[in-house]
Image (cartoon, rainbow, N blue to C red; front, top):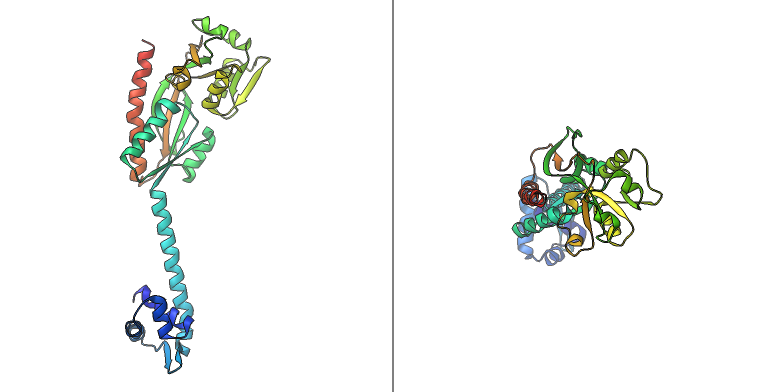
Length: 307
């Protein structure tokens, strides 16, 4: 039994004529008639009553029609599900806290797309908790998140350390603090400060560093990219991992610079995470490996910057 046989019998029933069904299906009438007869022989039931005026469903056929329709509906759902799986297999979704976007994320995605031209990459900015939730629920395939040195990583996720950096103060070159070899906590309390919003690791780090104090003028924003733009526009300074500032286009064009943070001994780790699940789609594995390979280049460059 083939699904097209069931489709043909429903067409004959709907149109009330083998001739009209053959025209709609673009088959010859003898070929259609033979297909229907083969199905009747296989089922052992006369599905149609053939009259000079046309073909109609027999009493036995009417009893079987709901089952035929159910089979065709199930086939349609199967095809739709397979199509969705194919679409998903052709897309890799990455959640990111917008750290190391220019030196790591963009070059990795560019290289991956060159090697996988048929695979789409969707990049979504989100907070760390949202990324963890989406990874566990299957909404993201990979996640780029910051961790402070010593933080525990979720047991449900496989974590790979990509970059290790130190917190730095991101500021404009014409800022008075740019003349310092290092910026102290007291310095930060004397200038407008752009902090990451609650939920970001750098918000937690800054709150710990300042011991809950904040300067009289402060801003909150989402992610390093917006923070750097606000610095470039002269709204204040911000504290970011060095790998989010080094080689940034705003730094290359002289709009921002950075200085070490006095007492900033703790390291910030950029982690690549994915759910512990098997099997992992090939596209996800390949993009994961591309991130690791690119991070080795970026990490080496960052180390050279401080030697």
